[in-house]
Length: 203
Image (cartoon, rainbow, N blue to C red; front, side, top):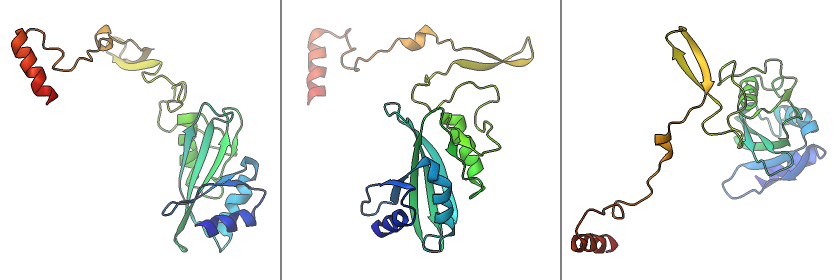
């Protein structure tokens, strides 16, 4: 795997920023320059030394503490040579990443999912529509700053005979949490019996 990463870096030196840590049994990993991504990916597909015929997956990672908070991770597979590589580029919420859908058409679905879930923009992607959330959905639910409860809830209103969106309302019952263990909560037992049960629990 180390030789594979070295060959890729030597072939497109301006496209590879750094090499990922290659551990025994792990996949080869490189961090690529965003602007050089199309040239790098085309070379990885067409060069017979690499022959990555398939883009198996494309996903996003959100790291809010970083200046470019998003990582776009491409997992490539060569069936003919039986090896894999992981290519990673970084971006922020405004800077687009070049689309690889012209290189691997299947990436259209993956790029739509990354945009839907994270808000990552792909330049050159002509079909950037939501794929998992509703058409009127606002926000990107896999961002770390997106609330777990969401902003709105959806329900069917029988009076309007339509699906309606309303602000999330959490019942107060779900906000009262009892963190006592079963032993700590047993306050109704006589003193001697409670001491005996506590001794059993500690043993």
